[in-house]
Length: 313
Figure 1 (cartoon, rainbow, N blue to C red):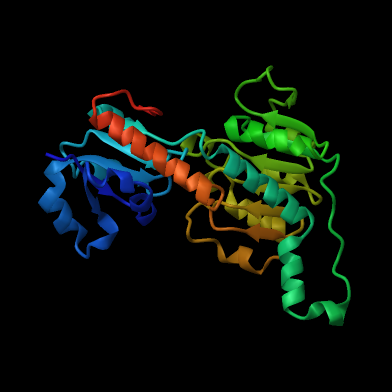
Figure 2 (figure 1 turned 90 degrees about the vertical axis):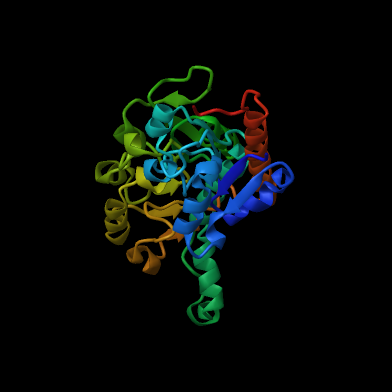
């Protein structure tokens, strides 16, 4: 009998097409009555395919008494109740490594776009202001600027490597110094911000880092500073960020993630000094396919009785 899986997002079904002959998959978004579906098949479900934003709460897991594993599409797993999964002996996997390049590229893209005012320039041309108002205000250059990275993991270190091409001065903050890297370790986050032109957020999400980037950190970055977040929206105090952008206590921000996405605070919408994109750090064809392939490999390995490739639990 084929193992039965609940699939929570349309994109997963496409990237997991190889599993169709081996598993029975229930795309939960396609049904009008989810409660009925779960009531009908819940006891048969042995796996959940989810992603970093949908996750799997304790309540969701407990609707499936025979649940054995959760395969998550994404490197972050803060939306999965890991403690509850552990208490039930549920295996959890994610997709680290394969999205490093794409997310690091997005961090660099946001730095360049905010620095050279790309989105603002696009609006300037489309609105017809160029021939009426003349040249728009100058942007800046990345060359030689100071980059502070919060979280020098796989993504942070790859982004540092990319930024080195611009001869940027690179420092980083994290729980531990990493002597293998040729960058300056700063154990004080406020000092890192004060000594940076750009603050790049690459750390993990979850309650441990909630509002890590608070009003004090943002104020230390200052009116000429730029904050880039490619991590999780929960890491930044959005109220403090919005207030600083409105009052010009912070110069610019580039945001790929938000606290309650896809809902974005309305106050950001009217500001020219913030660039907003809809969590597309890993949204390239190549990266998403590689992520889907890894979810597939983890699920197939688990139900074949083999070791999963990238376990969280």
